[in-house]
Image: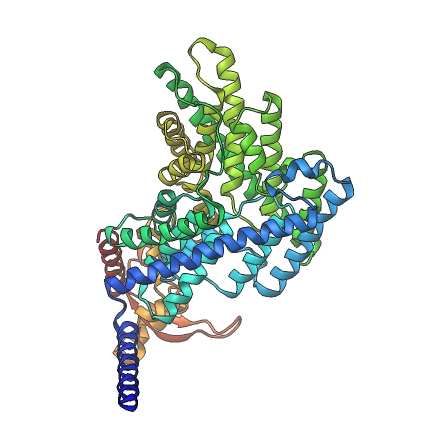
Length: 560
């Protein structure tokens, strides 16, 4: 009897194994079903949430170990009591470590962050780099742990994107599935970082995927909730910032002041972004002119940060202590203005020095300081119709961050979820809308899209601008054996009308517009001084067909 039961149980296990094997093979061949996809989204959400929490613990461990502080939320206050040379040395040593890591594990010494995730979603079927991404995550952890003046949202978003990229490769996901899984990972990472499930889901849709397709909404929400649950199991259901008393808007007559605050915050956001880009260009020119190695650049940035932190320790790390002080009105007018200016300089030094970290948390701090300064002035000029100056700090925090991220919807919700204050919607929404509208006209939509534009990756204008860059000329051309007119091709080559087979349609289409020809010879440029090798011909009609198919597929995905 026992032998029969064991045999039956063994047969059942074999059947289950065969069924799982067939299901796995089917999923790898045809992609996951809806139920399978939601389950995968849940697993990715849990994994991304755990990664975000572990990253936060890693940063806290480094800060506690290096600075000797017990409560990392009071880091800058504690740093004031440290010897000046210690405040100087810690960021400098962190910069040395970051420089060595990036020099050995990245081809360009550049930290990967949110902009690379956006690029992966648009141009690489939802995949991001892994080797450079791991080095970037470690570099960002060291940067924040040693006092770098950036945030933790950029690194955790890229770490989550690496998790989804691995899953997409394992199940051989197509572009749509890969992008949806990427959105799930990003939503969970943001939610786990800020205890903000609604904002996390909308951030993934608004900033990374850049569309609100219905088919992506459910799995992204599932992953976002999973990331939030991980955060609350570890840290509890508490808001990041506690606001004292009521921050309700006292009079509708006060709303024009928030319109002006939005414009001011838009200019502050543009100043922050341009300072970062200016610092990056300046340090690149100096590095090239002086012949400095890659690894020395973050070390010099760390030394400058340490020097600045001796007099202004509030720039150390994420800066939640100073942000909380601004939101609770514990700073004077001159302190708010000076701290905001110094923080902009510190962020520019850190990011221009290629040290690592994100831009979101610094923009929250700068926004809160800007709003507080504006509120102190406004409430003193018109005290009879003014509410609390801390409400201006809250609105300013959202306005600067929204303008920097180019994400008014998700940033507004993040502000509400970070503070737990849902009674101030009018003030925050008015300021956010004006700041975003102004800043988006002075930069390429957002900080991230401007970063990509500076690397000649044109995503800000939408799919019609970047889809051409997804097609290599060699993949669309007609080969020489397909009956092209080789004599005509060589005549055009002699006249300088040709395109490299390794180029993209983005380079080929302007040639059609300029030359008004039916086809362009496609050549292989072997090297300097060598004659080009004829590969085939790119016909204008073939290029347009490929482009139209890509536009149709993109439209179908975004409206499904």
